[in-house]
Figure 1 (cartoon, rainbow, N blue to C red):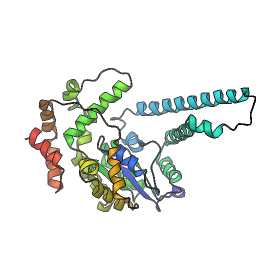
Figure 2 (cartoon, one colour):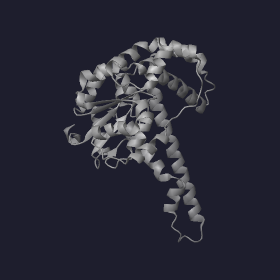
Figure 3 (cartoon, helix red, strand yellow):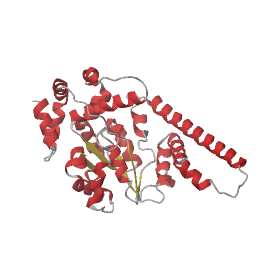
Figure 4 (tube, rainbow, N blue to C red):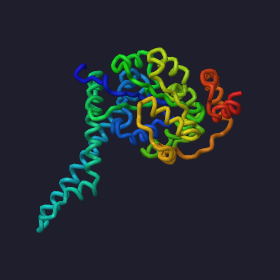
Length: 325
C-alpha cells in the first residue's frame, strides 16, 4: 500500500448527511483547480463494506453495471453508425472526429465509462487507496462524498482513519424534520422517474418514522460521537446546511477553504453558487400533525444539537418550538 501513498495530499471524506447539501457541496468544490473528486460522486466503498445489512448492495452494483452497459452500447452504436456514414461519403477529406465527439458528447460518455469501470474495480482497501492515488496524481486535494457513510459504525470510521490517518471529515447537518421530509420527497421523485408508480408521502410518512434507513440518517448525535472517538478535532468540520446554502454562504464556505487549504474564491462567485441547487425536490405541503409525529421522534436530536452548538440556525429553533414542544 506504500506504493500508493497519499501522505502528501490533503484528503477529505464527506459523510453526509443525506439531503443536507452534499451534492451541492461536491459540485461547488469542482470550481477549485487544485482539488478533484471522483466523476461519480458517491463511491459507496465503506458503507458497502460495513453496512451490507442496511444497504441494498446488490442494487448499487447492478445499477452501476447497467449504466456501464447502456453507455458503452450507446457509444459503440454511435461510433459504428458514424463510421458507416463516413465510408459512404464520396469526399473523405472532411475530418469529422472533433465535431463528432462534441455533437454526440462521446468524450463525456467515455469519461463516464472509465469512471464506472474504475469504481467497480474497487474490491478492497488497497484498491481504494490506489484509486485515489491515480485520481489525484496532478492535484493537491482529493476526496469523496458518500452521505451514507454517516451510518458507519465506529469500526467503519476506524477503517478510514487506518487507511488515511490524516483524512479530514466533513459532516453537514440539516434540520432533522426538514431532512426527513426531503428524503421522503426524493424517494417519491426516484420512484416516479423509474416508472415504479405513485408514492404518497403522507401515507408513507408514519411508516418511515420506524424505518432505520430514514431515521438513522438524522441521528446526528451518534455520528458526532462516533467521529470524535476516532478523528482528531482539527480533522473534523461540522457545518449546518441552512447556513452554508442560505444564511451565511460566504463565511461558511470560507471555513471549508481554510479547512482544506483551498484558494480563496471571490465573494460574488461563491454567492452565485447558491442558485445552483443539486437534486432539488418538489414543493409538497406536509400536514402539521405529521410533522409533530416527526418532532416527537427527533426531539432528543434537536436538544443534543442545541446543547453542543451555540449558534444553531433559526429554522431548527422554529421547528423545535412548533413541532417538538
